[in-house]
Length: 494
Image 1 (spheres, helix red, strand yellow):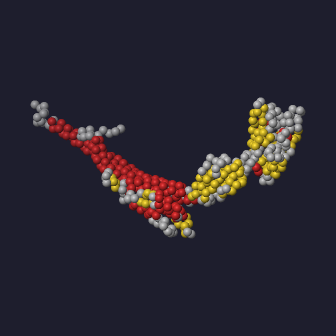
Image 2 (cartoon, rainbow, N blue to C red; image 1 turned 180 degrees about the vertical axis):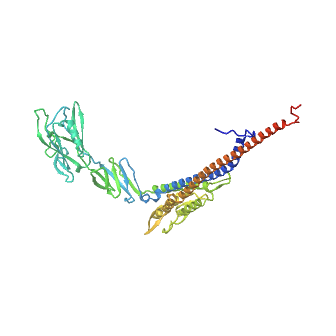
Image 3 (spheres, rainbow, N blue to C red; image 1 turned 120 degrees about the vertical axis):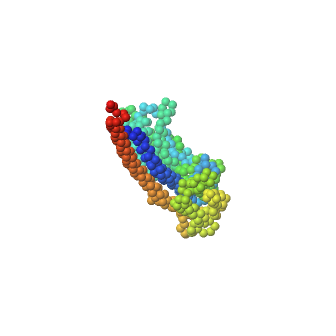
């Protein structure tokens, strides 16, 4: 039950208590809010700073990677006929490549059969190797030399799979480097067999070992209908519809070069040629250092650095036009970071000699705001004159026998220190969070303090109210007694 107050005096004690408490609470709470606002502003600012430094570090990734400086550009004047790619092992050069024939896989076709026809049972043996042919037309084998590095594959044909569909599925399921399919020929079907790999040395010999030539007289033929070996003639067995063949090509006028594959990786060190079509005119192949990879990496770094400068300028500068100060203006940590980053970019690289020892030497300069810009003419001249020095200017590498740590590498290491969980930014953030926690503790103390103050004020005013009520009651009693005294003008004596 809430006690009624002010009954004795008529004073609004509750309003008076709230007014007095609020008058004392307001400045204390305002001080806490100001402290809290300052800390949260600093927390937000350091979060922005950390994000800016993290983005700057990301912009260094390509420049610190030595693979960027060893990348090779490979181009073809006729990429639809001869495509080219290269690794870092390739040497800068140019070539003329002509294609006489493309490498081909081998294909066979069976006689046309009805889909319901069945065949004798037994074993199909698939062997890869190199053949010679009878006559000038490559229709049947004269000799066949098996490839000793490849194991022959045996495929069992039983009464469960001695149909065209069964043969097709059995060959495909064997995963022997051969693909089989059915081709509809009028009302009948032919079994097509194609080798997966191209090249004459990947030719296929198919031999059969029949268990039963005719099961109950229902079979059309035994498995010899699917032979293709040195005993096969044009009149029986499979028909070769396309012979396996090597690619024939030329490089810089050297004719008669061959490859079992249309993808040639061993003709030129570090270079892969992909033959796509025959050529009437040789394709011009150019192998050169990929300057674009380097300049692109530099441009990305410059863009990242300038974004970092913009953000840190906002955080640490005074804006005269808006009359506002950056949240980190005058902050020691921010000043230290700015100074160290600037020095890491501006200083020369120890260990480099000659004309290219700092970024300004290759055309990367700083303007009045601290932002970087690139003179592409100067940069390209440096890449032409001493590409190793350009690498040393950015990455961690060896230059003329000396270990050097370039601008990007040392800046990357510096940023790691700032961004680490135990770095300066994390330390400042942890400290600010501790301050916020203490402010919250102070706010709880403040709440308890004013709860006690309110209780004390209410007790005091209620005591005063009771006293006033008592005084008033006593006064009323005395007045009544005085009125009853003899001789009182208000008395009723006669």
